[in-house]
Image 1 (cartoon, one colour):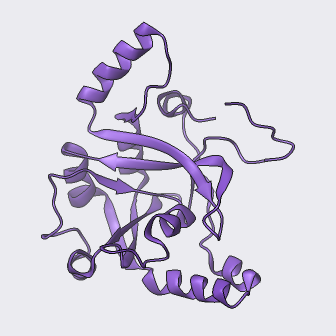
Image 2 (image 1 turned 45 degrees about the vertical axis):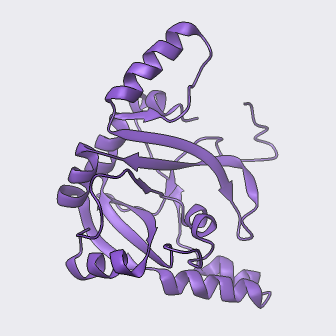
Length: 205
């Protein structure tokens, strides 16, 4: 799908995230019974399940859309998880797109084989604005399973912070019609640089 960059200056598929030279921040939403132990331990512990795929999202606004500003059942607590860039890029390198990227037979066969063997799934979904309306470019979601979940929990996590109140503050500002305040509260997210190898794997633009 082509985009008109004169209207939409954002790349159609790019990772936008809060990051430092050594870390990147991703978001997840959980019930209090999972979030609170994770905050206390600064890692995910039971009842968090390592056997299920867990999805991490670098976009704060996509997370806000997904959890309804932390109001949906079992998504009442939103966590900002700071992880190492090394771990994040390990996941991207071993990822497979959730949906078939092409229509040719050889592309389909290669994709199916990669999907079967990969511990990481990637989806590109429409980014959202403050009112959860879809925008003309995509935001990445990354699903971790198997070895990727173990590495995420045991090796990559630098810190876990509760940003539920921030979600509420932004929604409150919007409810009061103060768009400027709501915008000012958003975390600053910039384009996250990736190698040409990762760009090919992710079909990034």
